[in-house]
Amino acid sequence: METAHDPARREIRVQELATPISHYTDAVQYGDLIFVSGCAPIDQSHQVVNEEVTKQAEAVFNNLELVLRAAACTFADVLKVTVYLTDVNDRVAVNDVRKRVFGDTRPASTLIGVAALAIPGMKVEVDAVAGVPPYRGANP
Image (cartoon, rainbow, N blue to C red; front, side):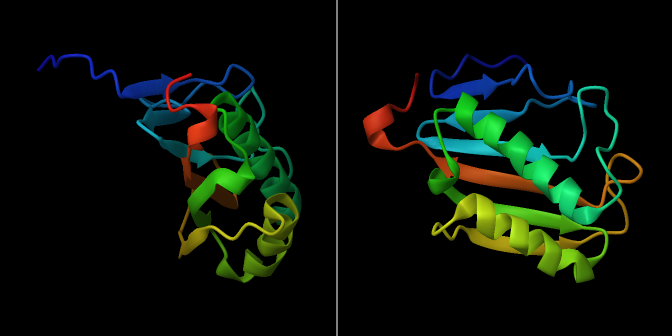
């Protein structure tokens, strides 16, 4: 069913990231909110960057930063994250990376242990919701 274009909705695709592996985009802006798809620890050729979870977490947050920047946001604008781990015992290592990237900002957060992620070898994935600060404008 075809629907009318909603001017409050904008799809965001970040060229520096790997092409989505299914029918989605990197983020969707709706009004003053940014909904970021799960960021994976992969390079542009869909290869997992490293088998070590800390290196994977660094790649995930680097990729998340690219999406946030494309939406005129920073980590300080993140309202909520969901962290998916194949081993919840990796929480401490991932949290150390989170503390570095978020600094004093503390988003709402949910941690979910999963049996597997979309690409074999992935140990961590993070999605997020951010708010576009009014002084930067909701629709760039």
